[in-house]
Length: 348
Image (cartoon, rainbow, N blue to C red; front, side, top):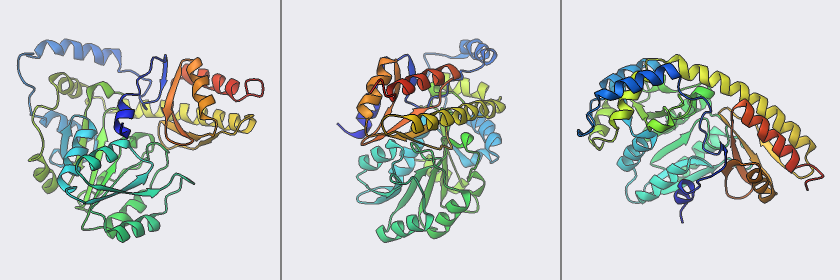
């Protein structure tokens, strides 16, 4: 079973889901009512419209670019698939980080490409010069990584990304900004200066719209026109299109959501570091620029079983690593109480 299959089959019956980086804040009830009222306009016997002009216009305003610079996809997965499929053929090489988002592995393998990973797993530090050195040595064809990084939560600076763009001026560089709102630094403004730059975004995280499956590719207009030839029609459902056209008129919502979540993240991190200091068994947590916190322990079986007993599910990775999504105040309190108990002298 591949990494991707393990990922999608990781369903849980736990009442507290801290495993998928979903935000705990649902859509405002007034906005929901507007969406419900608009549902009557959907003709369920008709295919969805391919006209994404309204969504492009609204999202372009949000990211401060032009509608012509955007492709709308069924989640950022679809737009990633389009670009990777366009570039990675045969034995082409993709440079990414290790660890990073599992779908990069999935699409690269699907198109018979080879993944080259710059390892950040040991000290969770990114050295841009060593990254460039590895890419040059391997003569890579595509550079792709999430920023902030999923799952570690580290962030690569705009200055460092520009250095990468200059070093690989003849290669496509994709920066996946799915978690941008929790960090606040973007390279979208660079797409016209650096023609090799592409940025992916999503409504699944800070916008709190994972159910819609809507993502975006942002790049210079010529690249967008070319890639539109590879896009499959009818991938955005009528419901998702309608809902997005309404919700995107409230661009303050993701900003408000991110502010609340960052406050909870900082509180949770402080509490987790206190647990780390007092724990009877070794466990460590790392500072994050996103809506999750990365951790390590050699006692992961004890951790996972203990949390399962408390009906809490987190993301489990290979080796000693795990990731905890920042939850609501109630969920975070329950998590902290459970971890204190699991790693106490009496429990062990």
